[in-house]
Image 1 (cartoon, helix red, strand yellow):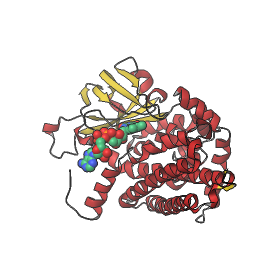
Image 2: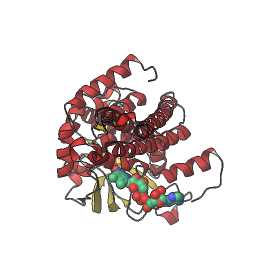
Image 3: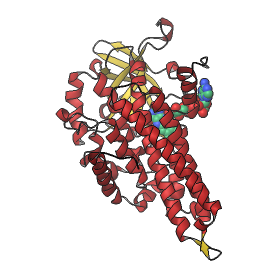
Image 4: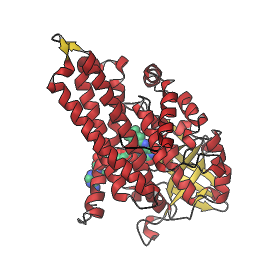
Length: 386
Ligand SMILES: Cc1cc2nc3c(=O)[nH]c(=O)nc-3n(C[C@H](O)[C@H](O)[C@H](O)COP(=O)(O)OP(=O)(O)OC[C@H]3O[C@@H](n4cnc5c(N)ncnc54)[C@H](O)[C@@H]3O)c2cc1C
C-alpha cells in the first residue's frame, strides 16, 4: 500500500468499523426486497461521512476529495454498497462551487446533519442518452417561478432523496449560439414537488440501485432554485465530472479489493483433489493478475485525486482512473466467480450480488466508450467522433 496520512488511515478504520455493523446478511435482505438501505445511509450520515466535503462553516468536515475517495473505497471493500449514498458526495461540488450563499446557508447545514438528503441527480433522459446536449426537459420562466415539463430516466435514489439537482433546457436549441449553452441547473425540493407536477416510477434493475423514471408535468419551482447562472448548467456539470469520476473509480477499487480478498481466502480454504485450489497456478494467476491490475488503477485514482486537491484540472487523470478502475473491478468480479466455482452463484457468499453491482461501472455514470473518446480527442488530438 502507498504511504497514507494518519488522517486517511483513521478514516479507513472508522468506515470499516461502521461497515462491520452491516454484514452480507443485511445487504442480501435489501437486495432480495429491492429495498433502499436507509439504516446504512443514516449511519453514514450520523457518523459524518456523507458530509465529508461540506465545509466546516456549514457543519461538515471540510475534507478534501482524497478523503471522500477513501470513504467510498472502504465502503465497497467492506462488501457494502455505496451506490445508495455516493451522489451526495459527487453532487456536492456543484452546490459548493455554483450555489448562491442563500442556497448554501439554507441547505448545507441540513444536508450535513442529515435533515435533508441530496441524493438525486437528474441528467439522463430516455431519448437523448449519452448526448446530454439533446436533452428535452424544459424549464420556462414564469414570473417568480420556472415551470418544468419533461422526463428523466435512471434518476437513482429519487424516492429516497429530499433534493434533486436537475438539468433542464431553459433556451430552445434553435435559439442558442453555442450548443453547450441553454441548459440550466436547478435544486428541486422533491418533497414539495412529488404530487404537484412531479411523479416517480421505480425501474427494477439487475441489482438494488433504486433507480427511477421521473416525470415533470407543469412542475412549478421558485426562480431561486436556479443554481448559478441561467444557461450555464452544462458547464457546471462538466466541472463536476472529474470529482464524480474519481469517486466512482475509488468505489471500483474497493470492489476489486473485496473480490480479490474473497477469492484469495476461498482459494486457501477450499480443498479439491485433497489440496487447496489456490495451490493450482490456474487459480493463483488470475487472482495475482487482478491484484496487479487493481494496484495500477489505484495509483491512477490517487494521482487524479491529488491533482484535483491541488487545484489542477485532472480531466485526463480522472477519466483514466475511472476507465482503469471500472475495468479492474469487473475483471476481479469475473475472476472471483471463477475461483468460487459453483458457490460463486450461491447468494450466501455475496459474490453473485457484488458481481451484479460491479457490472454497472463500465456503463454508468459514464460508459467506457465515452471515456475513450475523451482521451482520443482531448488528450491525443484525434478528430472528434461525435
Ligand atoms: C443503474 C443506473 C443508475 C444510473 N443513475 C443515474 C443517475 O442517478 N442520474 C443520471 O442522470 N443518470 C444515471 N444513469 C444513466 C447513465 O449515466 C447512462 O446510462 C450512461 O451514461 C449511458 O447512457 P445511456 O444508457 O443512455 O446509453 P446510450 O447513450 O444509449 O449508449 C448506449 C451505448 O452506446 C455507446 N455510445 C453512444 N454514443 C457513442 C459514441 N458516440 N461513440 C461510441 N459509443 C457510443 C455508449 O457508450 C453505450 O455503450 C444511471 C444508469 C444506470 C444503468
